[in-house]
Image (cartoon, rainbow, N blue to C red):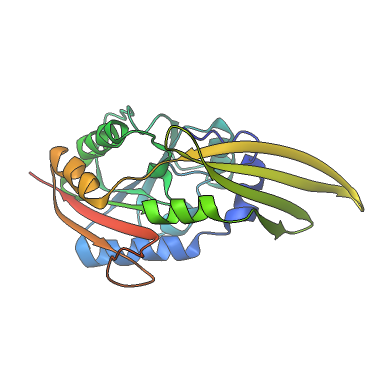
Length: 240
């Protein structure tokens, strides 16, 4: 699982305010479960998405990274946040909706891990509740692994992103940040984060085994999911 211990303090600067992602969640909930009142963000990071949803819902966050959770608690001090693994979390309560965005599920390395996480989500949903998540597709991870390293500038700092495939079938994101201390002087730090994706048919099967039904998939950029889709959003409903 990704820790973000080194890159955590730059996370919001790199990822942005997540207003668009929050707007997507809000739209989906209004369309599929307008009566929803409680939302759990699994893999909540710094709480960026929840900061836009808190005006509409009673929200809760879960993440594995102590670094990101510290930032989330500072940003949203009145919101409950818990440190837990998405494969085994147990909050002792249920929600109208669980969201898991920004390819957080891709950090799980085996399809059995995905199945365990889906089962945990199902246990934490009220009857008829929604699970909304997104993934990087296999084709996107392959394309990135074949691409040249990229340089991303944020404020006065630089980040070099070098994506490669590993021998065991994972995609490794090698991230190196050069933080400008003063003009011409930089401090460097780096971290490697791994991702894995699976065929959509496998993912659908894992969701059904966990008890989900009415599974809908879509591509925000292309509309309909196709072989060229690079990020897929999934919406499914808890049975019972």
